[in-house]
Image 1 (cartoon, rainbow, N blue to C red):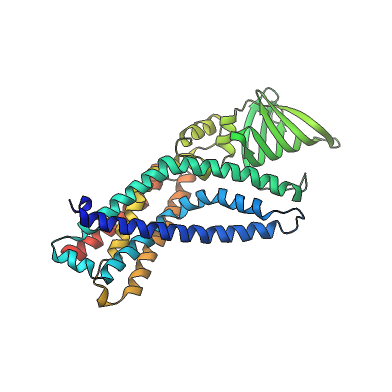
Image 2: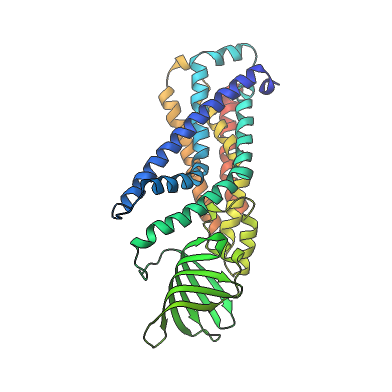
Length: 364
C-alpha cells in the first residue's frame, strides 16, 4: 500500500513535521497570552514571582493543547497538501496513478495514532497537570481574596448526612477531592428547614466528616460565630467530591466513568462526564476528519490559483465543525440528546461532507 511505502512515509512524515511546528507555535501563543494575563492579575502582589506564573502557565498548557489539537491538525494538513502541490509533487503522484485517497492515507493514519495517544496517554498527564495548576493558582491568589468574599462562582454538590441535607459550594478542589478551598455550606435539617450557612477558607475530608478551617457560621436567626476549626458531618467520599466538583476537562479518559458514577451517587447529573468520555473516544476520528476536510479544500493544482480562498474555505469548515461540536455539547450536557449522539454526530456529518467533496473532485 502507498500509505506504508516510501512515498507514503514521505507524505506522512512531512505532515507530522508540519504538525509539530504548528502545534508548538499555537501552544507558544496560548502560553504567552496566559502568562501576561496572570502577570496582570498578580501585579498588585509585592511578592509576586514570575517564576511561579511561568510554572502555572506551563501546568495549564496541556489541557489547552488538547482543545486546540484538532485545529492544529487541520492547519498542518492544509499547509502540507498546499506545499506538496506547490512543488508539483501532487501532480507527479497523480501521473504515477496515485489517487487522492492514497495521497492522504499516511496523514490519516498519523492523525488517528495521534488521537489515540492523546486520548489514552496524554489526557491523564494533562489532567494531573491541571490539578497541580489548580492547587498552585489557589495558593497564589488566596492572599488577594477576602476570606469571606461573596461569590456565586464555583461548583456545587449536594450531600445527605445524619444531620440532614447540605449544599456545598467550593472554588477549588485539590488532592483528588480531599481538600476544598473557598467553601460555602448551606445546611438543612431532616425536614428541609434551613439551619445555617457555613463559610470556610479550607476543608479537609476525613471519613464521615469535613474538617473546616478559618470558619464563620451563620445560624438561622442568630448572630454569626467564628471558629478556627469546625466539624461538619458528611456521607461523601473523595471520589464523589472529585466527580462532582472537578472540571470535566481536567479529568483523564480513564477517570471519567468513575467520576460519572460518583456524581450519580451524589445525586448530580452525569451527562457532562459521559459527554467528555465520548468526545475523547471520538478524538482519533475527529483528527482524521480534519485531515479529510483539509484535503477537500487543498488538493488542487497550485498554479491554478485561488489558494487564499481555498484556505479560507477549509478554515471556515473547521470552524463550523467546532461550532457544531459546541452546540452538540450544550445539547448533550443538558440531556436533550444522548452524549454519544452529541459527541459523534457532528464529526460524522463533517467527515461525510469531506468525503463527498473528495469523491466529487476525484471521480466527478
